[in-house]
Length: 164
Image 1: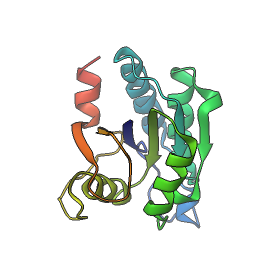
Image 2: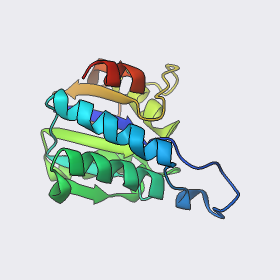
Image 3: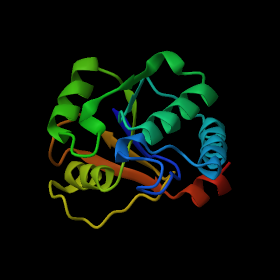
């Protein structure tokens, strides 16, 4: 199985026009950058059987941009298990129940870096950070919550854009 983790794009600051953190949207710059990142992902010939997104607006917008550019609108689903405070062990069960070979998870920090740490080491404190718009690839023979995966690569947004 190939598991990809993508952090949402640049979002509006906390507070201000957004009473709830979950309502924050991507900025205009965030939208444009995510479109360029999604096009670079297409150039890398990435494709997914399933795209799971946090239900927070900025993550949904990020996932929708990727799904649109990669023509994968029908495989995009929202899950509360990717939200801030979501349960990563339930997320793993959800993924396993679907049985996909290639999955893209769109979410937030520090959730995503903690997930990477747990899957590659069994611990949650490897000090990995995914920048906004950053992408990671893990591979696993059998996905479970604990040490089960290999880190294939981790790219920041600039590296993705330079790689197209």
